[in-house]
Image (tube, rainbow, N blue to C red; front, side):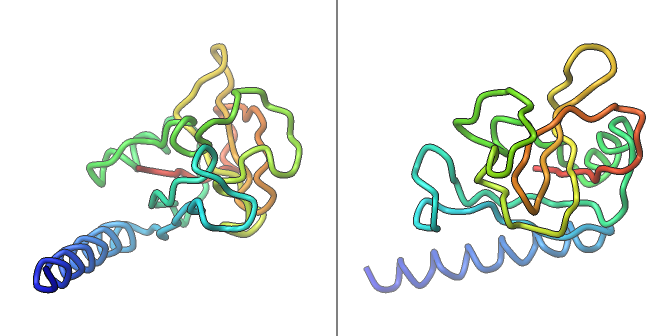
Length: 143
């Protein structure tokens, strides 16, 4: 049993290292969402998922392309903010899964709203808003 646990730990360490190299080698930074044991989280709002955030801000379409260039996809709102309604309130803590996971930077989700907007999440406050898809201020967030 001990050998199996050690083996699984080694596999996880190698997989995490490969994910980090892929992200950082393409001009990105790894971000791990909160886990259920973190303050303010429960199993419905926090999942510990790892994302890759671009180090350069870009528009929504460029964010899709940047993620695809790494063999990833632009993150779905439901995986960024599990259990959170798709209401852009702009209030601190709207998305506790990513709150406190970066500077005051907004990241794109793949969820479009109408023909001109998409949902964005602030990595500092966890606020959720609609971003104009042509704006180049938000960053890509890939899964």
